[in-house]
Length: 305
Length: 268
Image 1 (cartoon, rainbow over the protein chains, first blue to last red):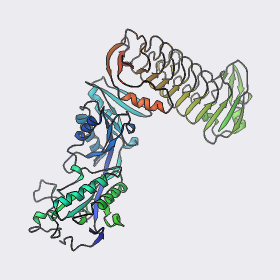
Image 2: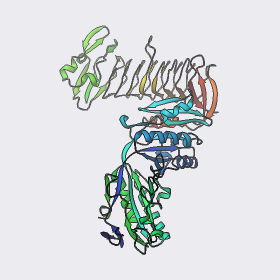
Image 3: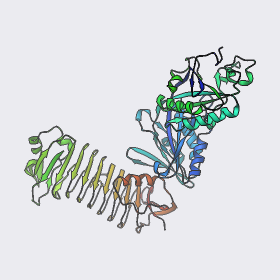
Image 4: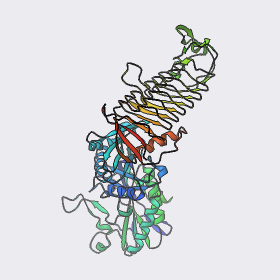
């Protein structure tokens, strides 16, 4: 295997950019608006409902906070957060969100939950319409301008949840790999990249803090595992595995990006790549599986031209 | 835009249910002027009572002069827009299922009776039985928005099933009588027996808590998040929303009926 010093590359802002591509794949996504009486309670609902949702390899959905919303931006005039959820199908997405809203938002004091996308009836998923049964017959609904809002009685008043949520066919798995001389500088670069990527609307960085340290490859020597550590990018294995790392690289971080469109993911990758280039960053690459896994190929060279 | 100017000063009511974008669409002047109307019980032509000008290029109709005696304008329309610069007669927009009607004057009884969709906005007052069911019918308004900036008479929203009625000033007796579902918001004073026999639905009284029927029972004071969605909707119509801060008192009723309705009014 060639390491990164031998593969074709470009130079951008003094950093080597490997001439490769991020391999992404289609995924179904939706936007959930959660509100509460205060920013604090809305944040609690947002974080708990999007927890344990970093990768569909091991979670029912990829989810996270897109951005904070001011009271002027929410349907009920209260503080809120915009959450993005992604799954392989509408059925899987509905199942995951019903469970997460039911367990983590409905249960959270003063919250309400609204759809954040235009609704195409043929592609909508039902959330409030499933959760309403918790009302045990005491639930009521309001229909205004074609949108149905379920009102479910709870112990601090009522939980309001929109009946249907729109979905879009998006793109998951956009990514860049940041290879740096030290762990500290690699993390600084990754943090810069995350902050820049998050400025793009319609994208989600599903991993903790937006950064992945455990880049994976498909499969494992253990048959039960679908994915395992990517030894080619582990600096501690450089001496014993087929490494992709130059001798002066001591740490690698990955930024993974899902989005509602290829354009949004590309824009976020571009922002991340540009922001990550800096002190101690030796090289930026991208994860792919030779083009066999996903049909969406985003070339790093297109992000620096 | 087709422009209609009402020419008659007769006190005999004119039934002109042909005045809708649906009827006018694709017709020439002469065809429009020959559309049937009833002057009392006498069948006539629209052109005998209105001067007609303009074209139907943008699906809209503008009506000028005082049409207080013209009934059924916009009834059963499904599309387009009607704007009336003066007053209108009974049954405005009755059975409408789409499009919008704006009246810059006042209307009388049965505005939006049994309407199914669309929007009716009246900048002045309206009469009795707004959005109501016709006598003998079991269901009144079934959808859409009915916005009255002035005052209304009795039995507003009688037997309504769905939709929004908002009244900027005062409303008479029996508002929401026999209501099946839907929402009525009033910003002024309220007559007696509000919500009598309502099964479900919501009555929101922004400025005063009227004497409620004994078959309404207090539940709690709370902050219903869904109300803001309605208030935001009403802001689109410059509706007077001076007193929308929580908490709200919730009364459930009418307990002689199903009892799943609610009256929301300002908590003390």
